[in-house]
Every structure is written in C-alpha cells, then in structure tokens.
Amino acid sequence: MLKRESGTANGIQSSFHVQSSAMDLLSDILQDAGLRRRVLGLHAIPGDAVLRFPCERSIGLHVVMQGPVHVHAPQLAEPLALAAGDLAVMARGCDHALSVGPRLAGLKPQTIGQTPGPAGTGTSVVVGGAYQLWNQPLHPFFAELPPWTVLRAEARPRLGPLALAAGLMESEIRSGEPGADTLVQALLDVVFTYALREIAAERGQAGHGWSHAVRDAQVRRALTLMHERCAHPWTLDDLAQQAGLSRTALAERFRDAMGDTPLNHLRLLRMQRAMRLLAETDLKLETVAAEVGYQDAFSFSKVFKRTVGVPPKTFRQRDAADRDHPWRVGAG
Image (cartoon, rainbow, N blue to C red):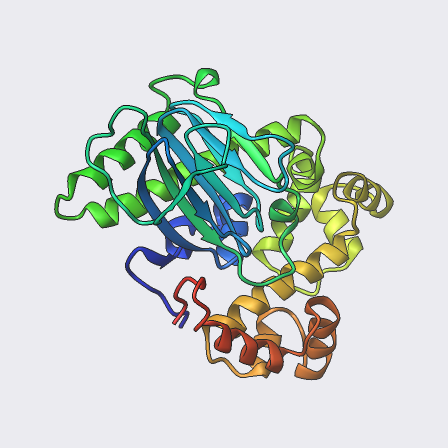
C-alpha cells in the first residue's frame, strides 16, 4: 500500500489519479512523478520588501492577485513584470525572489507564510504553490519546461476556468472558514493542472519535445501503452504494431519528436516508477523489480544504477535520510 499524507504538505497522487482507460497521459505523468505539494499561501508584498523562494527541487507557480509583481531569478536577463491575474510557472531549480518594483537594492526580507488582510497602498498580493520533484531523472515533460512561463490574464477569458479557480483559491485562503485548507489544496491542484495543460498545448504547437510528440496520434498511442503497462515486456515491433506503424516509422517519428528511442523512454518510465516505489513503500527489491518489468532484482539493479546513478538500496537509504531536509515536503 502506498503511503499517503494529509495537510498543506501533501502527496498529489490522489488528486491527479484517473483510471488508465482514460488515456490521460498528463495525469499519469503527475502520478508517477510522486509530486508533493506545499501551499505557499497568500502573501502581501509591501513596496519596501522582498520575498525569496528556494526552489532547488521544486517546480511551482505564483498567481498575482494584486500587482504589480516583479520576479528576480538568475535565469532571467531582467526582472519579469507581472500584473494582476497573471500566472507564472517556474521549472525545477528556479530559485527566485518577488518584489513590487524592478529593483532589489535596499529591500528588506519578508517571511514566507504570512497571510495578509486587505492589501494597502503600494502592496502587491500573490498566491503561491510548490510541487516537489525531489529525485531525478525527471520525466521529459518536466525536464523540457522552460525556466519561466507566464500565462497573461489579458490572453485568457475573465470567466474562464483558470481565472475562476484562482479567484476561488484566494477567497478560501482569506476566509478561514471550516474546510478551507482542503479546498485550497484542491484548488491549487486545479490551477496548476490548467496551467500545465496550457503550457503543454503551447509547446506542442511550437514543435517541442514530449508535448509535440503527443500531438501525433500514433506516437501518443505508443506512449500511452508504455505508461499504462510499463511492466509489460514491450519490444519495438509490439509497440509499432499497436500504434499502427512500421517498426522504422515509429522509431523515426518518436526520435524526431522526443530525441530518444521508444525503448529508452520505456526504461526511464520504469525507473521513475521504481523510484516512487522505493521511496514510498517498503516493498522488497524483488517485488519492485517485478512491478516495473524486470524478472530479477539483479538485472533491475544494474539498469537502475545506470539510470539513476546509485543502486536501489542506496537510493532508498538516501531518500529516507533526505526526509529530515528542511526543504523536503513530508513524505512519511
């Protein structure tokens, strides 16, 4: 039985899990990634303050409720200006700071976690959330995310689902009513998922990586099969037949879109599922190996070490020790 959590630091698996028959690849990816959420709350940023966010092993988002807000990060050539209603999504490892104005000089640090009352003049307000991806390698969808993506309010319907969900989330954070914590967590997942959906659509149209690959119905069919049945002993011939392509055509189209071969991608999916099982369960190594398609623990361990960088036993020990890390979202 996989372990679950409750509270503001929470496993995201249950929120995103859908039946595999729905062929919802994005939900499957979020499930296997073992994402754990931390609601960063509603923050008022006075004009003389700066709010810093360490995100070494997290992706995340900020929704601007009252602007302006400027994002400062090493990946940005200049501060990123956000207005009310804008939503910024950052990739894994994007440490950053938020301020009202474009300059950091002379600003005083502010503590994360303060929930403001009505915002005063010169104050900006943001709602934030972090989704932790503690272990690597990452799925290509997460690995390919740009450091920063901004979804502008002016480009979205005012009464569209993303805007409405963000507004409800702010209202619940401010309300303090019974059940608000549960609602905020659920609404954060809704906002996050809508944002990822929009990013995937934009990147797919631009011809980038995984998001582009799933626009090809036959390549998507092969990807879906690997996600749904990663323990199955797939061969390239099997996948091609199921996808309605020749062996050569599937390999070429997959490599053109993903920059990798189908069987290499299958191995990555297996290792990601194995990392989650090793981190979240007490299953024996032989059982984990069988769950991800290997006949014995020895062959599984060889592939795991080559992909992850350490043997499964070392990975499990390291992950258990990391649970005391001050920035680790609770996993026990």
